[in-house]
Each structure stands twice: as structure tokens, then as C-alpha cells.
Image (tube, rainbow, N blue to C red; front, top):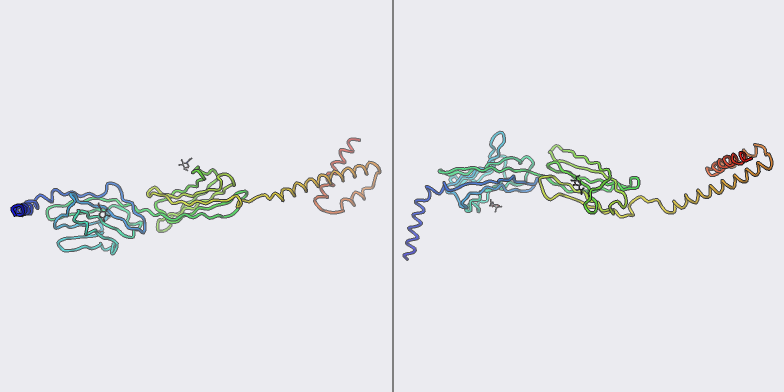
Length: 311
Ligand SMILES: *[C@@H]1O[C@H](CO)[C@@H](O)[C@H](O)[C@H]1NC(C)=O
Ligand SMILES: *[C@@H]1O[C@H](CO)[C@@H](O)[C@H](O)[C@H]1NC(C)=O
């Protein structure tokens, strides 16, 4: 019983004495580092009272600093007000259940690029006031696609594209063991009306250069991790010189040489034995117009020269 009485006196003492000094002991902290949010998602702008307790008769005012202060959200114990600013309808929220721990952070929903900037968290009661600053950066990331455009020379032409980045993204092609690819790469970045960046890059990959494992990585400095897409090009996809076609050309050339040699020897012998008229020679020429024959005749002329000069 005595203990309870003592506790009672004690509480009364705290109630009477503390309000004068309690507020002075509070301090407010925002975020020393910029907060990074992603377009379309929600972000929490931190603002914390210390000690971790509720400030009595508190007003919390969140504002964005531009050319003027724009009210983002206002809360007041006295007038039981908890309302978003005019241009933030349905987009802001305070964590009322966290107030008892001195947490007056703001949730900003459905981030837009225009939300980037500096925010003020202002907290006051009749005896005390302080404000903290929070910088918000907004990033946008987008999925990456690789298009196989088709054969180009002995290689395969690829395009890597990604649209909807902020800030400006970097793009890199890498091979199997993350080595940089040495082929010629052409990359271009464009910005649309909503300030979002698109990036597209072209490359021609040769067979065997990296065993067909190619990755395209896109990132911006603001957000980790990057986005990437890998593709495996099997050997079959590369343009090939068919072994049959190669064999055909070798055979065809051999036939030409042999035919040419035969015709040449025969022709030279004939010419040497009997001085035939030119009309017969023309007849041979007129036999056909196939490239093989023309070549044979051509070789004969060459051969003839040797024979004649040998005489
Ligand atoms: C405040 O509370 C919210 C919601 O629980 C939490 O996400 C946030 O991290 C808290 N902020 C601080 C500074 O503790
Ligand atoms: C690959 O290229 C990037 C920039 O183009 C460079 O930062 C990186 O150091 C290179 N990596 C290797 C392994 O050469």
C-alpha cells in the first residue's frame, strides 16, 4: 500500500514538474543521407523525435521546399487534424501508431519524378519547435530486353533495349566471365517528354568469341542493383559455310583446271601439227558461252603462248 502511495506522489511530481523541461529535452532528426525512392512505388521520409516519446500537444507539418513552401501533410493534436496538402490528396500518410515512439515519418505514395527535392519535417508544441531536412531522390528502373536481329556477315546482330530510366542509365555488354566485349558496340540514349531515359545498343557477336554467352547490363548510379538480361547463342545460330558447298567449289575448280589443261594441250598440238584455219578456232569458241569453256579457251591462249615461245 505504501509503495502504491509513493508511486502516486511520484507520478504527480512528474506531471507537475516535467512539462516545463520535457520539451526542451527533445530533438528532431531527418536523414543525413538522401532518401532514394523509385517511380510508382511508396517511400518513407524519416523524421524522428528523440527521446523516443510523444511530444504533448504536437503539430507536425511536412512541407516541400521549392520556390515556395508547399504543404505536403499537416497533423495537429489540438484541432485533431491529419490531412494531406492540397496537391498531395490520397498520397501521404503519417504513422499515427508510431507517434508514441516519436516517429513522425511521412509515407509518400506512388512516387513521381517531380517528387524529388528537399522536404522539411517541422514539429512544434506551445513550448518547443524544431525542423529537420530530408532530401528525396527519385529513380526509375525498367526491364531489359535483347532482340536477336539476325545474321550479319559471319556473326549475329543483337540489340539490347530498355525504356523508362532515371537518371541517365549506363549500358554494358559482357561476355561469359564478365569480360568486356571487344566488338564494335553502338549505344544511344534518348530522353522522353516525361524526362525518362531510353537506351538501345547494337552489337555483332562472332561465333566462339565468348562461347555465345552474352549479357546486357543497364544501371544508373542511384539505385542498386542494376537490371540485366543474358542470352546464350548456340553455335548453330551463326551463319555457316556449308561443307558441301565448299567441296563443290573445290571440285568445280579442279574440273576447270583439268579441262583447261586438256583443251590446251589438244589445241596446241593441233595447231602445231597442221596450220588450221582460224574459222575452226572460232567454231570452238562458239561451242558455248559457259564460263567454264570461256576459261578453258582463255587458258588455251595462255598455253599457246608458251608453246609458241618455246618454238
Ligand atoms: C517509423 O515507422 C514506420 C512505419 O512503421 C517505419 O517504416 C519507419 O522506419 C519508422 N521510422 C523511424 C525513423 O523509425
Ligand atoms: C569494362 O568496361 C568498363 C567501362 O566500359 C570498365 O569500367 C571496366 O573496368 C571494364 N572491365 C574490364 C574487366 O576490363
